[in-house]
Image (cartoon, rainbow, N blue to C red; front, side, top):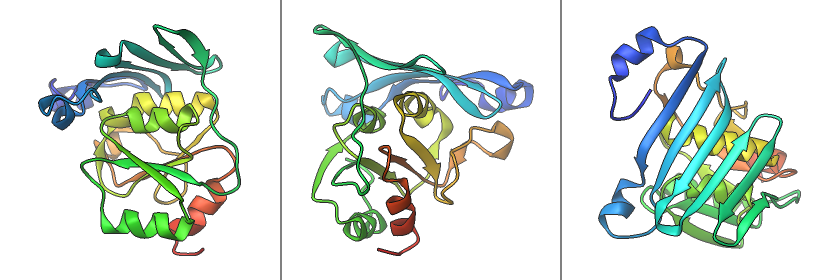
Length: 201
């Protein structure tokens, strides 16, 4: 399944194991000359992303996550295991450069987030996985191929990736090609994020 492929035909023929590919995530960043665009490849089994690869061409960096094998980042400095932060409430958030909305702003306020950074593409999910941010909220629709690779990496790093109902994010083609929204949370702060999502502080 690819954003540029025969989507309808793939949905009809896909089984329980399939690839999700986004050959250019962060198109706006690419067009504007920002180095934040990525290539995303994920393998999904029974609705769960079990393998994810995110290439960052401009930085010559590769993020990988595979079920049971952890997650890591490789670049010119070598390879390191991804280590997310661990805290009961998120202090640092990463948000979409192009899709920051008033509901997202309100959620960050309820969470008491002190710092935020804006990025494009799946780099936001990688930021939580490697400890550069504690939460990434996306309160708007995204296509499955935009997030599956990042979800696999974040999950293998030990993060929580949940839908707006607080349940683990699923990748079932029969349920549609978009998620309504999701949260990527560093270990330990899922409960606080769920409460804030429901409007509780």
